[in-house]
Every structure is written in C-alpha cells, then in structure tokens.
Length: 168
Image 1 (cartoon, helix red, strand yellow):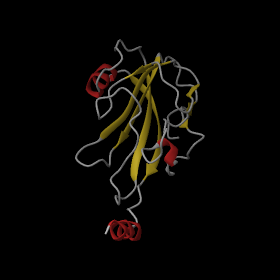
Image 2 (tube, one colour; image 1 turned 180 degrees about the vertical axis):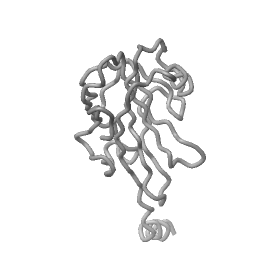
Image 3 (cartoon, rainbow, N blue to C red; image 1 turned 180 degrees about the horizontal axis):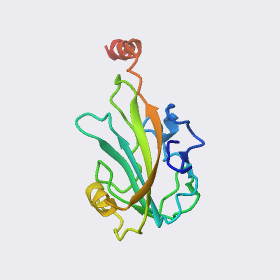
Image 4 (tube, rainbow, N blue to C red; image 1 turned 90 degrees about the vertical axis):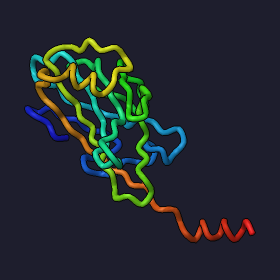
C-alpha cells in the first residue's frame, strides 16, 4: 500500500493494516501464501524482490518469505503460487513460512516489502536473507509496503478443563 511514485503493493485477501485470514497462517490446514498484486515500478527498474517479515517475533525479526526474480512490471502472485526464486525463511526452508505467533501475544505485524532494483540479482534459489540484502544494497530504487496483522487466540480454558475432567 505504501509506495513511492505510485508504486504500490496490495492484496485481495486483506487491506493494509488489517488482519490476515487464518487460511494464510499455521492455524488452518492447507494454508498458502496470500495473493499479492503490484503496480508498475519506477522506470529503469530491472527486477522486483519481495521480503516478508514479522518484526514482533520473540528475539528478533522473523523472515517469512524471500522472493526474487520477479519481472520489473505490473504483476501479481496468485494465492499459493510458487514464485520464480525463493530464499531461506527463518526456519531455513525455501517456502512461505506460515504465521504462527505465540498464543495470547498481541497481534503481530507481517510486513510485505516489495523492492524495485536497478539491476537483476545473480542469486541462486535458497540464498539466505543476509545474501539477499547484501546483493540488493545500493540497488533499491523504490519500495512498496503492505502490512497484515495476525494474533492467535488463547486456548479456551473451559475446553481444557473439560478435556482434563473427561480424562479422569
């Protein structure tokens, strides 16, 4: 949603600052990455890079998705689509890391950052966040940001007590 020179990132699944549907989180089976759509980046852009992070994760910022090799034009990723090149998330996997904040935490922000670069990247799939940031340094011409939130409800104490009583 936030961008420079008309460069914007949106999703049909959630509005900027609004809650992610559980179908894009660890709370539902068969969850996938949400659909994303963006406007044309500034002239001269050569490649787009998507980085999704949870700055509210315990300990440090958790990387949920690293995607590059996206054409520097108006475009989109469909719900659950496998992107051209994907790097390692906070769990060391090359896929969408499903949001799963600790139960009872305040809502976490999931920040979708779409970077327009002035040159294509020469990174192989599976690269780390550090490798991606290093390769992008000095080449970002614009960024568009979209933030979704998500919180997991605390377990229902009545249900837990019922289960404990039933086990007796």
